[in-house]
Length: 305
Ligand code: MLT
Image (cartoon, rainbow, N blue to C red; front, top):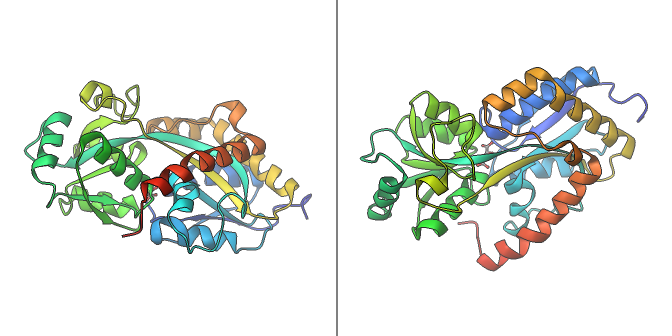
């Protein structure tokens, strides 16, 4: 089977809503992977419970390489320390395929707040903590991790509103239904550039080329509040090594595709370095991230509200 793989379309399960940051990574990479594999790559948005429902669907799928799981630091590491009853282990019940691009986050608010920069936004948050609504994709999602980092850096307590992904949360932010978000650059950047929302800071040491006018957290007044969200692709445990290797080769080809590179750069997504693109590198990185984060999240007592 491994020699002829794939003989039919491959499905990538995105555990969040269409139009959001995980969906965008899956569609950009998946489309190019499909060209390399000679098969269509179908995107299946199975949403809910901060991505755990979509990940479980893949854990339980046949280990034949035709059903894959895309996700990030939240869905494939942090959730493992928060959701006790999901019935899977993120490290031992999945086969790593490849590391996918990463991006920092943007602290953003709806237009129309009486704020002009990060300092005045933080002052506004402090004065309105009980009523300021902050959109997330659920407890443990990337936007929630960003929110927790913001709370820790500012000594505030945010009112988190969970969505099935930050695609729909962003629509509500643009419409003024919620007040703020800490969301990935790939999702928030285009809206900041279009003037539909306000961007205060990027959670990285350097500005994002996708939003060069938005200062870093160091420049804007929350020094050191760095958050990077990396993505990855996995198959169910027991998928043959040759099939995993074929999928890894297709993903590596996608990352080298000039049109993919241009699209990722436009969205502020950084591709993994060449020595991080092997199956072994992703496997080791994923385990190291779980070993690093699980004790921290458990000790912090992050719970599903
Ligand atoms: C999404 O695709 O909606 C996001 O990755 C959600 C998040 O984790 O913040």
